[in-house]
Image 1: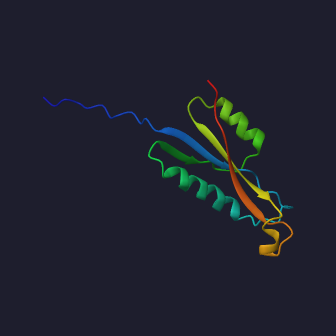
Image 2 (image 1 turned 60 degrees about the vertical axis):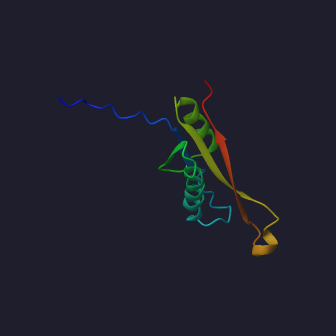
Image 3 (image 1 turned 120 degrees about the vertical axis):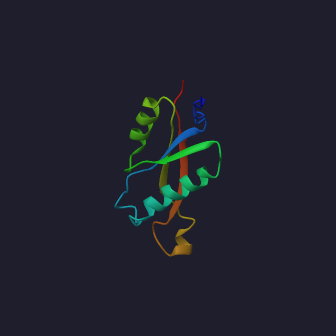
Length: 108
């Protein structure tokens, strides 16, 4: 008689990566939002302790905070593109872009 084995429970920490909705007045191309989100997720995936998922759509900060508060186990990472002056001269743009990642998680 064969003994049935129970699969091991996934003990990795679930993380959802989202990006802030695109602002058409920022001077940032639309396609970069997905690139920022994917790059952040790829870096997080390098950790064997994290189970990384991608948000299907963009969300603003308040939506990310609400989602983080309602989630029981998943941490929410909300990426945001930001305008700085330091890169303006290099890119010869008025509104250059720097990418930052902010983490918001559920408090238990």
